Length: 324
Image (tube, rainbow, N blue to C red):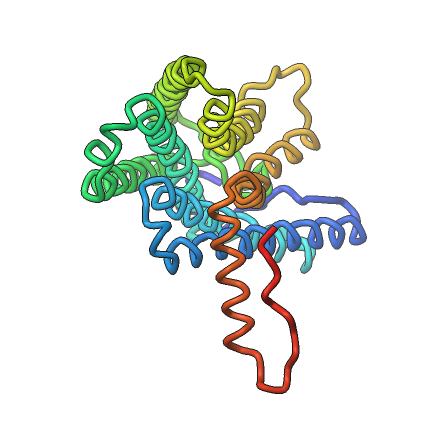
């Protein structure tokens, strides 16, 4: 293939070699995607319907749930289709769309986690100024700036990647379209432009990570100054879900991209890519729901209210159980 204009489709990496394993992977992906859709859908519905949850923390949590939904809907459906129909094809335009949305939602996840870290910092370190610093207008501006930045970032990466001449075939070593895998197919030094963009993005990621570390150092110092043990536990417990989500996202992504070449293998790369692209959207709602009693109570109220509204007069289900 002389250049990218002659490529009509790409070949994705198969999840398994046998039909039975492909069906198993299809079932696993289906379960994880349904869990992500249910969990994030419940959070979005609960925060949108619960007026007492219209606070900065839950506003950004709603945005994170939207990001998780978009993230898992970008890569998983095509992988499930390929596993079920025993194919590896993805169209050129479909691959470009997948790259755009994957970069968009991954970047949005990191941006929102950074903003949520700032929310926890203001809440614990300067609580008297919380309403002023994180008013509704400030939250709207921060969310809009984050979405605008990741949109520009995704457009730049996608346009630059698919302007490269490709002459190394059309087989990708990943189960979804990923920029590093497409760069490997390039046959000119113009790929250095994309590497420069990736280096700039890595610097931004590192900056977000440093900001979160610095914020949590200040948070821990503020928590340790609280005189009562119960107060320290209550303050720190509000940070645990965010810490768990950040740790899951950063650790899986970092190990997937920064692991030593000596331990690299196609099967390991595939497992890690599933881990960082599929697991966080499925687990994030569970992590936040387990530790946040206010969110758990609101979800329970929403569910019981739905059951009461849709039960017929002849039904006798008891839905007045206390929330867990």
